[in-house]
Length: 111
Ligand code: AMP
Ligand code: ZN
Image (cartoon, rainbow, N blue to C red; front, side):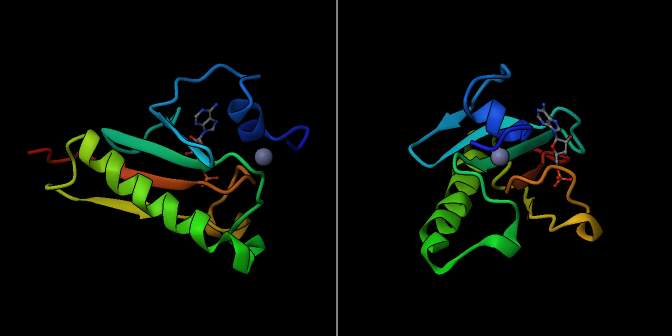
């Protein structure tokens, strides 16, 4: 847990948020400022700043994040219509919360 990290506070329940999914390594909640009808964030419980800070031992965590994204796309019924998954990396890449998170964005044309 990193002090002053918003997503650490959410993960540890210090800021209330509704988790749509939780396992031992990550949680999923809705983006507070959605860019699409469905906009979820897949967030590891452990604080990792960005993709730049990933190490070899994190390979299974990152793989899990994509599998959770797939599961959530099915749960939100956007898997057939299609969606985007996206990591913003550091300021120039549009990252504003420096705790790793995978965006799952879609639902423009839910079928
Ligand atoms: P990024 O630009 O990749 O760092 O994305 C950070 C995302 O976190 C943005 O899409 C914000 O809308 C979202 N966000 C910021 N604060 C909260 C919050 N308290 N709960 C849920 N999402 C948040
Ligand atoms: Zn954090």
